[in-house]
Image (cartoon, rainbow, N blue to C red):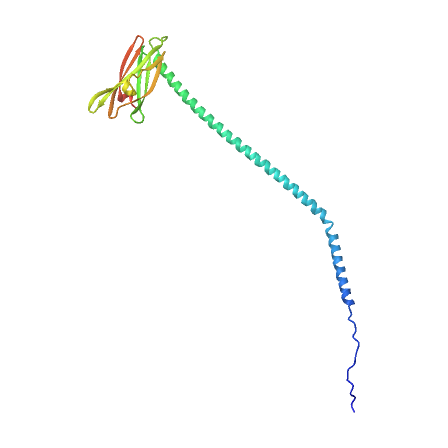
Length: 237
């Protein structure tokens, strides 16, 4: 008869071997420690050099910034100095131009005086030397009348000047007197006082549609009266 007992055999299980894994872990940690130690020893000598280079770079950067600030301040100073020089030069040129004009006017006066009192000139008492009118705006006219005298070199000629403008208006002869020229009644004459010559200047208004033809100048002093006429066309510019 067959044996009824089961065909199983109980075998005890062996415990797994863990020591190879532990050995591998230990070796890996040792390799990391060795690598860190080697890196630290390799990098340690270069750290002071790098720190010194960084410090030198910072010093150079600070020096360059200070130099840049100095150059900027210098540029600003030079720009201001150049502007001041330009303004001073412009003012000097304007002053020189004004002086040139004054010198030209003085030379013209000297030439006029030389012609007036020169040895070949005819001696005259109070006299209207010239009359000139220049058109302005709105029927206004600027006038310039020159008075002279070279008969008595030590005398002072004093008095008042007026003039009347004669011409044509609406096809008829007409004249505009001193009051009408100044557009107010009782307008006083223009005062003059000189030894050899004087230029009288001013402005008058002519009526609309009035065509001037002649200018009649009247001088009234303490003991003398002079009246002279000038052609308008010859006087106008």
